[in-house]
Amino acid sequence: MKLPTVEAALEAVLAQVGSLGAEDVALAQADGRWLAAPIAAGRDQPPFDASAMDGWAVRDADVQDGASLRIVGESVAGRGMAHGVEAGETARIFTGAPVPPGADRVVIQEEVERRGDLAAFKPTGNVGRNIRRRGCDFREGEVLLKAGTRVNPWRLALAASAGVATLRCGRRPTVAILATGDELVEPGQAAGPDQIYNSGAPSLAAFVARHGGGAQVLASSGDDKDAIAAAVSGATFDVLVTIGGASVGDHDLVKPALRDLGAVLHVEGVAMRPGKPVWFATLPDGRAVLGLPGNPASALVCAELFLAPVLARLQGGALGERFETAILAGTLPANGPRDHYIRAVAAPGPDGVRRVTPFADQDSSLVSVMAAANALIRRLPFAEAVADGETVSVMGPSI
Image 1 (tube, rainbow, N blue to C red):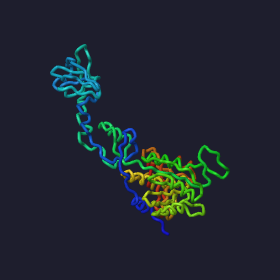
Image 2: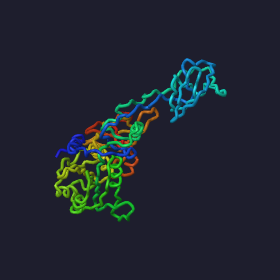
Image 3: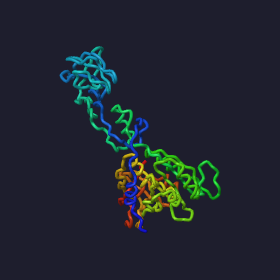
Image 4: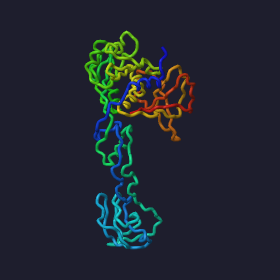
């Protein structure tokens, strides 16, 4: 059976996934979520002409070297002057404070000498007005963030500056994570001589949380088909993510267990490495099941390529283009018939251009390599060898 490409497999996956609807989310809890409704400004920002410097508010006609103006007040952030500035007058003003009526500019404090009730202007070459005009950031009614935008701390700041306390976001998907395998033992427990610690479930739970979902880790069911089916049947979720048991060995029982529950497979393997055994199914009620390989690198690469877009789609969003170019530091041989995602470290070179260095050992069981990597180099099927200094396609972590 010819395996689908990553693009074809993702298209088949997303064809089965729709939005879960929307819910109101407190501003402080919205990081990583997807907006289900646009955010518009309720007023101008700033809502008044504001000083961009500490200094003195003056009229243009009074700005002359050596002039002395009478000090008539003070404007500070949060407390402006009740009256304006008239001919021959000035007012002390601080950054962010409202500019008094009548004032045309703010002369910075270094260019003024205070002499009692007078402010004397020194010779200056500064001609800036040092005023942030009302609405220079955004205007009332302007759409600041569109629906389908993913919230981050900078966008939170924009929403907060518009006075918005609650965001309408895609409903948070509940993701059940089931790691299978008799060899697994939970971190903190005693491990037998033939066992390894379960690193897949906690890492995928963190991945889900960073993509706006809520993760629940199901108790490991081992290599027991009935136990797997029972664990799935007793869980409440929007998406089920299984780890391990995804291949075709005698102990790979996840797909048979899900088939017994009526699951329909839409993707059964992808032409990629690591991650060839990844699969996708839907349960009779339409809920999604993503089967990830058991090796940590395979599972996390597949999560980047398939789980991240699924979580975005469930919340009404979509991930944009995630691949960029970088300069290869090292060499890569010609690729085989599958997409190859190579763990690597990307960093700016001496010239400021980003360079990416692949790890020598790409064994998919190596957690230490995955932890040290901050990029994946994508090699297309049958790609030619790449020499040091040539360009490669790179994806950084979506989290």
